[in-house]
Amino acid sequence: MNNLDLLTAITVFVLSVLVGVEVISKVPATLHTPLMSGSNAVHGIVVIGAMLIAAGSHSWPGYALAFVAMVFGAMNVVGGYAVTDRMLEMFKARPSAGDHTDPRSAAKSGPKSEKARE
Image (cartoon, rainbow, N blue to C red; front, side, top):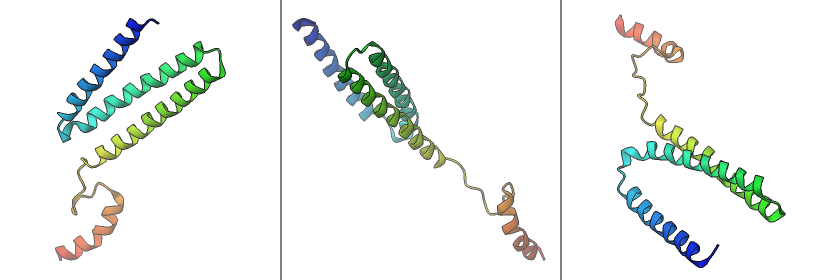
């Protein structure tokens, strides 16, 4: 890799960081959950890239770097889906007091509602 290739790679990296910061800072709070799901897909690609690095490596430092990349990528994927699931739980409607779809809530509220009818 010559100096021009390195300079081009650094320029692309810096520009992508600046564009990423601008895009993320403009996202409204209601879109953070879909954005987190998209981020999980990106981290899945990181895990695949780490596997490709491990397959092409012929030294222990290369294997160690690929292993660390796979561990961090996998942690981001699992953690991201856990956070996304938790955020989506916040948007589910809570059952009302008269809702008998859950057998446990029907058993608890059944006798009270019968007394109230009398």
